Length: 112
Length: 113
Image 1 (tube, rainbow over the protein chains, first blue to last red):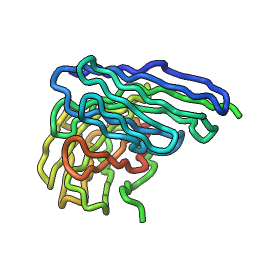
Image 2 (cartoon, chains in turn cyan, purple):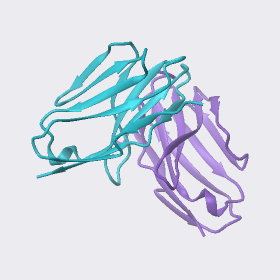
Image 3 (cartoon, rainbow over the protein chains, first blue to last red):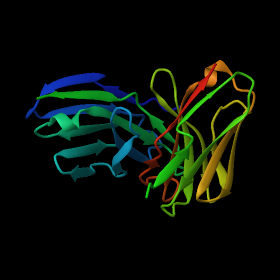
Image 4 (cartoon, each protein chain N blue to C red):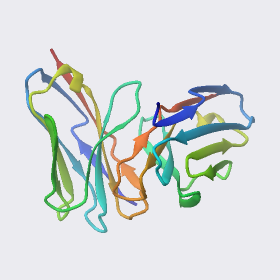
């Protein structure tokens, strides 16, 4: 059974601050790591899928890194904006069947 | 057009009833999933189908039965509903099984009274 953990559970920052949070996952039999953005009353939206150790992905002000050997991924947001407020989920796969185990998310609140 | 759609969006029903939730994707994906968001807001996978074939079947009561008439549809039928079945159920699809982005539907909020 995979145990995916995210920290911190919640985060409050000021507009313009840069921030980052962590997803840790079992490194054995790793297949893929997903990051999602989940706004209140909406459904999760895919941000990144990463598979290779050392992968770095970027989308606008958001970027992510992956370390499969030690089992962690970081999500970075540069210059946070109020519209970045959401819960950020990571999910790890250990097979190619698409079976994702989700962390419980980091809830980010960006104050204007 | 909505990529992944679910109906109904809200479902309120009594214990013991049988109900279905429908999911359709127009993305041409081969794989579809059902997730349950539990009371602690965690997302847990229930089932996945690849091209109408059951691939993932987690430890879910057999009152829950998925049906995939074609690869664009994955419906979830629930028999003898119980109070503990109250949750938000999300459908998702991806191009193929692993390492592909999953696209989520809007969710169906099921309330069992």
